[in-house]
Figure 1 (cartoon, rainbow, N blue to C red):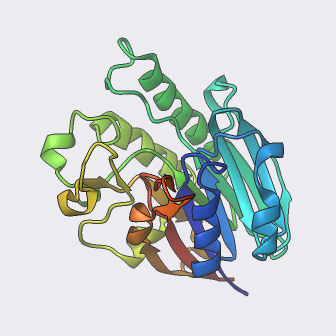
Figure 2: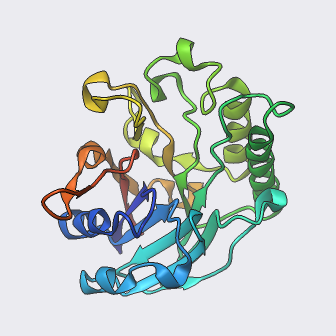
Length: 271
């Protein structure tokens, strides 16, 4: 069985419903994992997605923030969620396909602006969330699993536009990278994107603050696709759909849907 999975921080699934529909229609991944849905589950526009061939959805939602969802062409069953660091946020959901593959969809806390847990509660929450993930994977080693999502960390020097300038910027600080590495090692997760694209600058997020995000190209690779060692060799075809960062669709003559600041990341698995 071959299936393609995509992960995308959509920054409001209701506001950007048309962008999700464009991705589903144009790219047709078998499974699409969304983060930062910013919607209660019952308000997610499932009818539009089902009409495009995605009748299956599992999700957790919060009104106005957080939220994760898995849309699927393939039957998928909800196999639970975790509330790491006891934040009470909708940041994780897991689904299992009929072939036995478990898909974990994560939205790790961004961590605020100051990389100091004594001065910034949100940064401490981010580190604690990663520690919770690490301990869970140590205690219950995943098998035949794929982990995707906005992990809000760009771990490698070539995952950011300037390693030197971002060393003290949240998402690329050494302590975050260390926590991410410990989490990855605990589950023996393989970074599928970098397995396929081992060298070179690679980004999935570009700030809204840049007037011309593409020309400036000051990006970071915050969105990831990992797999357990027993299926990692089945992963291939990794790519970032950079163009989606610039998608802007008209609502009427005066308004349009603005893009997410993230681009979707894809991989295909033959299992």
